[in-house]
Image 1 (cartoon, rainbow, N blue to C red):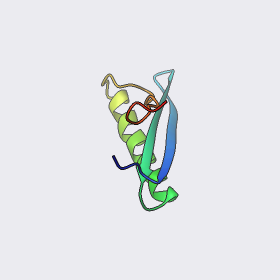
Image 2 (cartoon, helix red, strand yellow):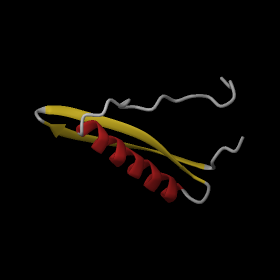
Image 3 (spheres, rainbow, N blue to C red):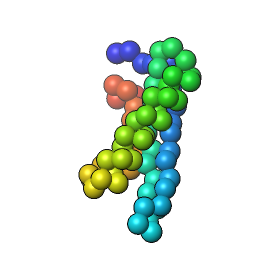
Image 4 (cartoon, one colour):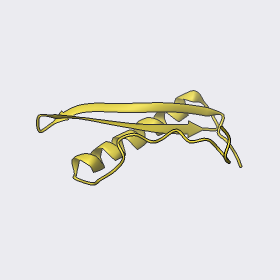
Length: 70
């Protein structure tokens, strides 16, 4: 299993219809921390748009260990 060298997390918080919506997503890259952050930002923006459109998505991605690691 390949594990990327760089990781980032993005969070979007906005009020929509009087209700605050927060969406968090992780991003990753083999190249740089900046690429990982761009990936996280793009994934968060996509997920936020889908939630606002009414799709039922997890607001936060769970942190999970690889291959049963603790």
